[in-house]
Length: 260
Image 1 (cartoon, rainbow, N blue to C red):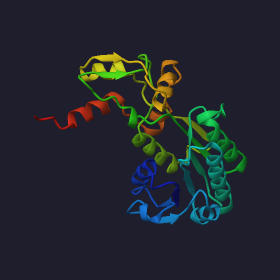
Image 2 (image 1 turned 120 degrees about the vertical axis):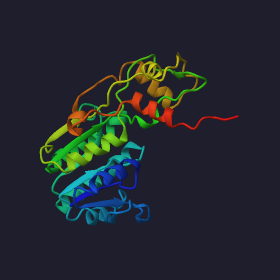
Image 3 (image 1 turned 60 degrees about the vertical axis):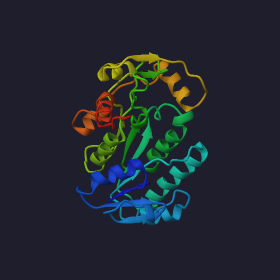
């Protein structure tokens, strides 16, 4: 039996959808009323370790989807409780949705993921680390005032779509060749000017005017911090990953025209 935590979230639902036709899968959710349809569901709350031990009982494979908690200390507690519960429940193997760089860094975004990877390694459980980049979904450029604008300096991003990452997770959970491996998943590198060219519109570089998450991310992009690329995602998928330009073209084609 494959067990998926945080199965009511966006990534978890996509993973469940891929696994429905591949064998026995159970969704673990904090609120059973929000559980995905069509599969058995169990209550499991990262803040309630006992519930996790019960939820993981009988699991041959466990997908530990990282907690949405932003506070690193609490997120680490959530993940360590899940790893301890997996050991106590006798889980056969664990796959964890980590973040790029968590193997070598333990600051900022990688702090909780680094601690979790170390806990999994120390647990003795067979494992697969699935290190994700930023999701492409919220980054897909949209045409505004006839152009695409950004403050990225034309540098490239290695984001990947949730749908591809979910399929890759399902492949890992249903294949024997992934145990003991760590994958650094990145999508096809892309830039805002490239998407503008694909859509046939001008590109405009605009300065960041206010501090905030996007300004911070734009600074990372301008510094080249998101230009690392590997072939791990495509190898696990067994096909090319979706490009941001292709998604932008699809969204533009499906957009409802504005009528006066």
